[in-house]
Amino acid sequence: MPTDFDKEAYPSPPRQTPVVEKQNALPDPALILSKLFYYSVDLPVTKFRGVIEGCRIKNRSVYYHQQFRRVPDLTECQHGDYVCYYEAEMQWRRDYKVDQEIVKVIQERMRACQAREGASHEQNCAKEIQQFNEVTKNFLSRYGDLGAYGSGRKCLMKQKERMIAAQAQSA
Image (cartoon, rainbow, N blue to C red; front, side):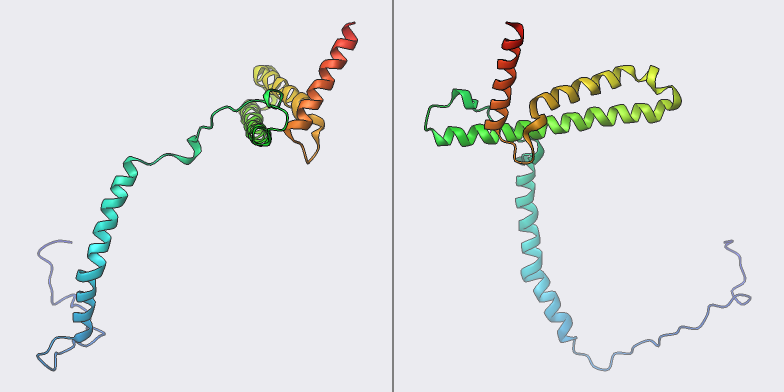
């Protein structure tokens, strides 16, 4: 907008709300109480929380990088050591979830390659398809026929049966 415009040609519109004129010289008690609350309660609490959160951010551990120590397998547990059985079961469940996520990541890579390459995905994505087939074969060989209530003990028995079948076939 130019600085030399004519103010008379474009007058400002009239105000819609009237200007409030102060009737007395005393300040508003609601304003006093709100300011009193702000400076006596809200401001100190906010500052204190900011200091505490600043300290916590420095020492914060990221939840998705939690590392568990490897516990003994079910084969290494002593007979009747129920704590060891429980720890081995929890380790198996963590391993199961990790293996599921590995399969999902490899599958996402394969699908992204197929979407990117289009009709020629069979020749251009051969490495990803071969890797996905290998990962799913390994996952199914370990967790395949366990059912909905799979556990570390069932998985161990399946592995044992697979080893016995391999020995019987080779003999």
